[in-house]
Length: 293
Image 1 (cartoon, rainbow, N blue to C red):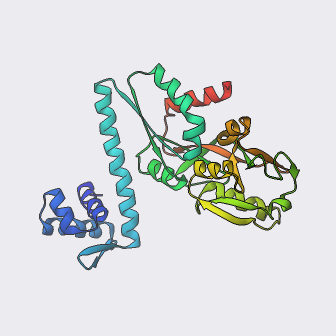
Image 2: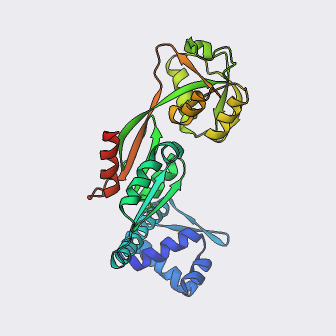
Image 3: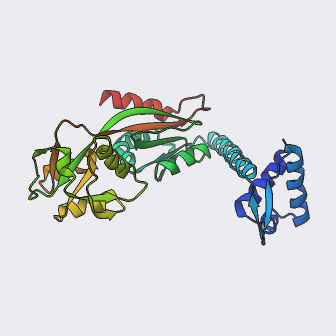
C-alpha cells in the first residue's frame, strides 16, 4: 500500500475537506485529489463521496481512515519514544475511567514515579469507550476500566480486582443500616447516573436479573461525587463503589443499606492492545503491588 497516499487520505478524512487538507499539507488541491484516486484504485474501493463543500466517507473509507489513524499514531509514538531514549526520559500514558484513577491507581502511580525520576506520566480520564479508543489509536500505553461485561476483538481485558458496590442513604433514612430485600428497594427513589454510565448499567441489570421492578428515578446526575453529595444532603438512595463512600460512612455522613442474598460488584480491568508483545513495566509493577496489598 502507498503509505504516502494513505497519510494524505487520512488527513483529508480527519478534517473533512480536500481544500482544507491541501492547505494544511501545503499541497495543491489537484495533487491531493490525485493521491486519493490513486489509493482508491490501488485498493479497488470507493473511499470518499462528494458532499457539498466537504466529503463523505464510504463504509470502506471509514474503515481505512480508522486504520490509517492508528498506523500513523503508532508511527508518531515510535518516533517520540526514540527521542526520549536519546535523552534518557521515559513516558507512560494511561487512559482510565473515573473509579480506577480516583480511588485505585494514584498510590501505585505515585510509588512507581518515585522509583523512576525520569518518567513522565500522563493520565487521560474518560468513559469505557474513550479508554478503548485511546488504546486502539496508540494514544495510551495501558488502560483501566471498571465494568461488569466487557470485550473488544483488538484488546485484551485482564481482571485485576473486584470492586464492591453498595447502596447508600442518609443516616436518618428509614432503611439506613438495615438488611432489606431487593424488591423493597424497588419502591424507593434512587439517584440514577447518566445514561452510558457503567454504574447505571449495573444498577439496571441488578433489578432486571432478579425480576424486580426498576426503582423510580428521583434524580439523574452526571458524576459520582455529585450523587454522593445529594445523598449526604438527605435525598434518596444511590449505588456507589465502596471505595468512593467508605470514608463518608465512617464519618456517619451516609449509611449503607444491606441487600439480602445479593453481593454486588464489578471488575477492574487492565486493558492492553492484543498485538503488544512486550508487557509494559508499569503493568508488571502494578500486578505485583496488588498481589502484595
